[in-house]
Image (cartoon, rainbow, N blue to C red; front, side):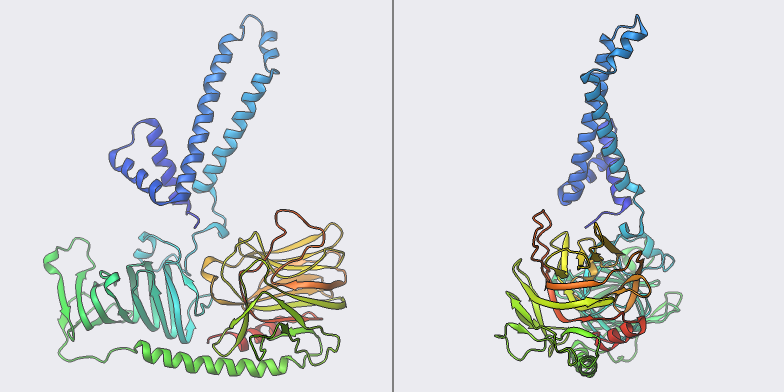
Length: 548
């Protein structure tokens, strides 16, 4: 997990205080804690100390060298500048300066957008808690989403890992499981912020929290009061104005004032069946009658199953239509009838020369829906071999893939065995970039920005790359939307020939990056001999996405 600029800057300040001998006891304790708990911070400390040591030696040796340089003549001093000893000191100082600049870069100068903390969509003016709360990575998982319309630029799907940050729904219901063991159902419209595994903030919406013993103390803060669960289940209904209701379904909760200066004497306890309502001023009154609880997990799971069936049926209709596309070079829908089959059939109905794929090592598993088939790529030997004849002016590569981890510098989606003129290499980088490499003379790579984050691991994503000869451009798409455009200076015909899905069998390359095996699943893959339009790609995504 990459550290934020502020986290690294804090570490550098503590190390500086330590080296200068004026570190306070609380600072010393904090430095020890950081180095004990975080291997990245330890490595930063080691690098910094190496720089300090190198500069100290350089300063000492430079002073010693100055002591023996005669001062009688300028010529003698100038002569010493060319000695091996001086050159060694000069090189050492340059290396030390470079390391110091690198540390400064990571401590605060590295502010490129793709180096920012990986958090959920989080506008900067939501609430005071948003700017003051610590942000961590992967503190929760989105496990259910039914009828959801997100109020964020990017839609989340079931299976997505969640960082600290905001979850905003215009409508629908989601289930979020925190790594502490606490689970919350959130019904839209809602604005709910994940702060830590044991803390969240609700601006408005309806929430049902289930808290096992392992997560006792799980707290949902609001602008008026904080609800601390001591086991096992409660509901919170909150209006945008700040007024709302809390009711205990089972167990015990405590109500704390949101005012940090409030004494413990004002804490109120609620047990099973009890509830309160509070207004915009934070005035609390006991509920005189029981309110109906929000949707429970069993009901949500039933609705999710119904939604999955509807989505799968919609994809089946699209699948039947897609097979008739005359521009399909190869189309693998992974809907084979038995686990023992080792042939991946191309379902293109108009391409008589289409060649089936040969499955090597991969195991059959479930795809985007329980009813959908997929292949799992885990080992470095797992792959699908294919041979695509012909030459193509334009090409569209499409895949539904679930990435489980970026184990390599490059992960293969589809690579030709060789890298001859016109050969395409479609792959992902360990940073989360989509790459199309085309052998054009010395070779040309078209990198998207960093579009896949750790929160995308474990969820189904829709990847498309278009090589458009007529418009002279390469376009990368993620989940139906373009993420980058690249100008083609000299478009050339593309040739695939022998190739692999999910792996690479290089003909001549023997370098350190020759292993490019995919870690994940594929349940749909297509090659079109034309450049699909943005509308075509968005329609394919909308009819094929795993949940609404």
